[in-house]
Length: 412
Image 1 (cartoon, rainbow, N blue to C red):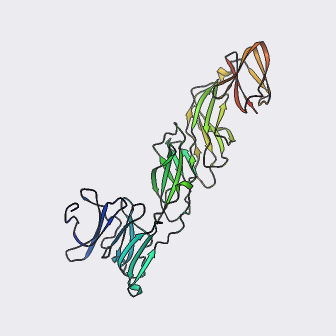
Image 2 (image 1 turned 90 degrees about the horizontal axis):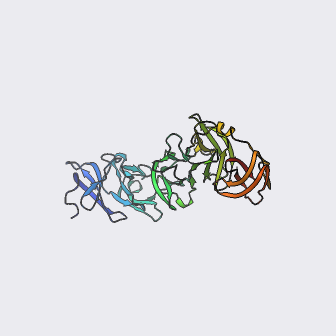
Image 3 (image 1 turned 180 degrees about the horizontal axis):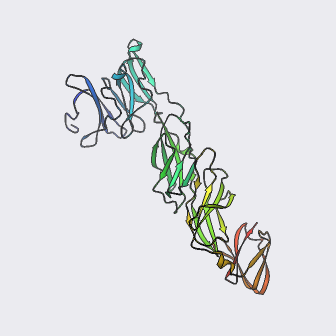
């Protein structure tokens, strides 16, 4: 005997037994008062030792009469079909969402009072309910839940909140109906892992376990409708957050970030906060590569912080896509002004770069933005010098004179 005898909370009438997808036993029972009147109902599952009550939250008291039917959908969710005494004994179907019972479809879905209910699911996870309907001279009727087309929603923004520092995933569900809930997935080593769910009326999710300062994260969204059907995760559009990092580059502030995924040709805006003040734009542009770098060649005196914003798409109103915030150590224009002047022309350059210095040039070095030295030449004490840069790829570079003085140029 499983869990002992007489485990129901009261006098039972018409229990229904079923096994879930993993072979766990469940029992749905109608409970009667001492006078034989239906007063409540219960659903219990066997945990290997005892029968555990799933609760009756959501099931109206006295609503379950005889001919209860119990079934599991293809995801293992318990569904209960019963006669709703409070609604002219019409058919009613409910499902257990983990904390209580919620209606599936319209209440009182039959034409008249019913008996002999049988609930089943097909391979597409569509529920079918068979019963004898008094409105049709007690003939057999079968109904399927006619679910509306499942709404296809995707993430419209994935960003790092400037106040909480957490990653936030947003989507636009204005005017979307028949959604039960949304499931959020985050990529982990190439596999999308379910990290949380929110009700259908919510349009944001905060990922408190991600570390935006450590890496960029990629997210996808699934929609579950009121029929418990899901959208396909493989066809969902992924959005990846911006991971911003700071590098100190020869007296200048350098910030590098990855390409935002999920928006075609986004417009980026580099913003800077000086000494705790508001973030104001310092540069804006569009790029299509994997990573890019912005160099703040003469940052203002004091403590500076940087972030990168994206102009939000039209279908994501009220959302500002932002990166994590990075801080630089104290910089100052005073130390830069006091140094000898290095003039580069033309800048940007294509083939030759003319260097003019107000001291003798003893050596010339060229570095890329990663700090890798690409060229080194010894010079005989001139104050002007030409360097051929034809072989350099397009990008931003640093000229270093006499192992001490720096200037930036762009190669077309």
